[in-house]
Length: 388
Ligand SMILES: Cc1ncc(COP(=O)(O)O)c(C=O)c1O
Image (cartoon, rainbow, N blue to C red):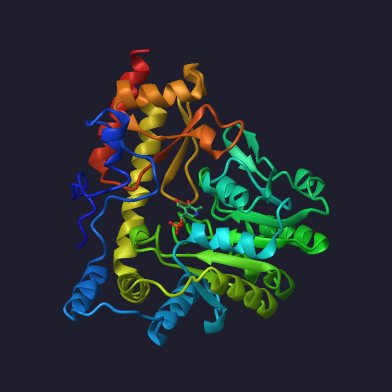
């Protein structure tokens, strides 16, 4: 019913993903970098925006009851999580949301723990608030990652105020197990540390893996946790800038709300709110189709790399549409490899170094595009590797 094979031309539309080609100097390159998918949007989102367009007046707006109901219903259906309306705070994106949380709950010089390699904006939001990034590197055993709990606890000082978690984890595609999350939660409880759980990829889970919402682990953990959610990845509507920051604890919520007020963060745009409500209320069928298509893309890409480019090493992602690929066997330094992939192979990936120290020889590949584009991109990488 939905045609995910269709290739939508996004060039010359001020598209961050595709219009970077001009900037990087290879107009024929295939961009598989930023986490943005190329599929036509769910038709129910488009129809609802079109309907509102007929109104012709676009003045100030606020979040209506049906917006909150749509969020609450999605969280219940998808994650078996009972969210109360008053817990939901709007921000114009998850990254801004995390930025504001850190601003609300730290003082300059405080420390925030992250688990590297991790989504590169995590470094920025910590530094934006004059806080110190403290890395708890994940243990990498032949591409299989796990948490170093001992190092995590050892890194905590009296200045550590926040643990910023990525769940599921970008870029490694890991869906954390309930026991792993519980252990982290217990350590944070013991040391009085606020947990920010970025769960923006939590609808994108494959196979037997199960996403656990951090604040559902226990009442005590709920009280020290803020969960960041959005339809931006699931429905690819990041350009409409909506996110829901969910704060069950009243004291934390009031403090956060005050901070948002101070920054004059109010409601969403009319179209952002409409898009989100449509996605969460009517987007189930498109979402199921997307998941099936993405699974097919991952199967295809992993098999292609394993059989045709065996010098590269890859693990099947448990969640996200991002593939974390080890290029170390090529013996090319990360920045040079990134540049040569653009200029010689004709593909734009995300270089591993942006996700933290120790990932220089990795590249991240975005599989949220039509299979034909992925095939062409992988054939280009295969040719590049064979000609080295
Ligand atoms: C873990 C993570 N958080 C947040 C974002 C961006 O969120 P937003 O566009 O809502 O600011 C991304 C985008 O790739 C991401 O991977």
